[in-house]
Structure formats: structure tokens, C-alpha cells
Image 1 (cartoon, helix red, strand yellow):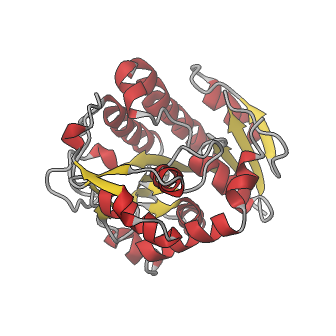
Image 2 (spheres, rainbow, N blue to C red; image 1 turned 120 degrees about the vertical axis):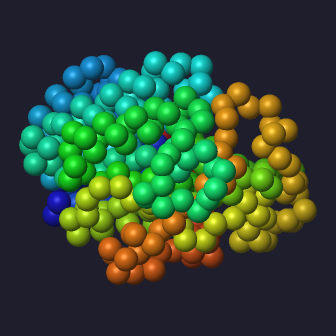
Image 3 (cartoon, rainbow, N blue to C red; image 1 turned 180 degrees about the vertical axis):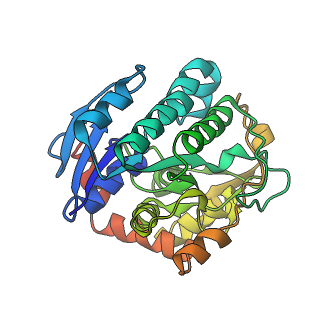
Length: 305
């Protein structure tokens, strides 16, 4: 049984990972503003935005693996408060990386596909990032801080979806919530990405840590599609009317934070180093649908304090 510390344990990845692996491992989940009740793992409250808080947490917990999911993940919030994004998305990961190196903790740090400007995908790990938004710039700074402080850490560029605590955190939930109510939902035809189902992502990250992988990896699906086509795929998976997904363009969205149009990432390095194929979109959506049929979203909502 491995001792694993998960930051951002009420978020999309942190919570799903902790639930998925609580029976096999000793999990402690760190939460801030969103408390949890009845979780099948230890829960600890901490405000990691405060300088020194991350280092203190690691000193006390002494895990074998740190899965660092906590972040300012809302692009619009980061655009309004770039100083907060810098503190949480860049300074904190660097602090955790330095402490994890000193304590011999295996660190897995979550970054984003948005570090690229989206002009010439697919991107490999050796391609030079060019972040467009305050969020993306802070995440790129976090990558550099982690790898400089702890070269043995895993930095995973990700894009994922799944069922969340509040039911409104992921793009798949956005499409599901609207389509299941018979409402239309806009899907961008000019933004391409390679999302993984969140629990499949969690399994891959844990396997990477177990195998002793180090450095920068793209941990996404090898199959990429537009957000419009993703919405239609969600509709098909649940038997909803595909025509409720309306084709739109990101330029018509009215959002403040810049979005990268082509975030196709190459997964060749990860597939080679793990020696296995990565999940395609059909596999991911099948798991997402199966969890719904098993009542998993309802179970998640019951954990909200």
C-alpha cells in the first residue's frame, strides 16, 4: 500500500483519483474552500496559496507520491488575477518540487496542453511552448519551476473530463447537462484537443510514477477532435439528439482569455516508455457513460459538505 498525498482533492482529477485508489492505497486528500464529507480517504484542509504552506504540508505528511492537482484552473479568473495564478500555478509547484526532492517524495505535477499557442499542432515534448493567456503563462512557469527544482519529477501536460463534485466542472458535463435537458449546446469547430476520461488519466499517472518515469510527458488521448465533434460524440454515447450541438467558433465566444485553436499533442513518447497503447475517444466515453449508469455522479454529489 503506497502513501499518496493528493492536492486539489475536491477538484475533478484529485477527487476522482482519490476515490478510485482509496481501497488500494493510503490516500490523504488536501482541500481548501470545498470541504468533503464521508470520503473514503483522509481529508486535510490547507490554504496552499500561502507561501511555505506546501513545504510544511509535505514535511508533516511525508508521502511516497505527491499528486499535485491544486491550481487556479479557470482561465477567466487567471486573466483577472494573474498574481494569484502565478502564486498557485507557478510558485507553489516550485516550492513542492524543492521539498519533494529533499524528502525523496515522488512528485507528479499537472500542467496543461494550453502552454502551446495552437498554431501548428500536433506538438511533441520537444516543441517550444508559447502560452497565450495568463493561465497558460502561469502553468508554463510552473513546469519550469518543477523541473528545475526536481528533475526527477513527472510533469504531465493533460486535458481531461469526467464527473465532478458539483456536476459542472468538465466539458463533457456541460454537454451532458444541456443535451439531457433537451437544450442546445455550442461546440467550437475551430478548437481541437485530445481529452482523456479522468479516471483513465489517473490510472496512467499512477503507472508512470510506479515505473519511475521522469520529466515532461504529454498524457492525453492519441485521438484528437474538435470540441464540436466531442459534443456530438457525447450525444451519441447517451442517445441524445446530436443536432442539439450547435457549431460555433471560439472567436464568437466573447471570452477574455485567449484560447489556443490546435492543441493536438503527440503521445508517442509516453506510449513508448509505458509500452502500451493509450485510450482512444471511444474507450474514454464508454467509461464516462458506464459510470453514469452505475450512479457514480450521484455518489460524487453526496460528498459535497
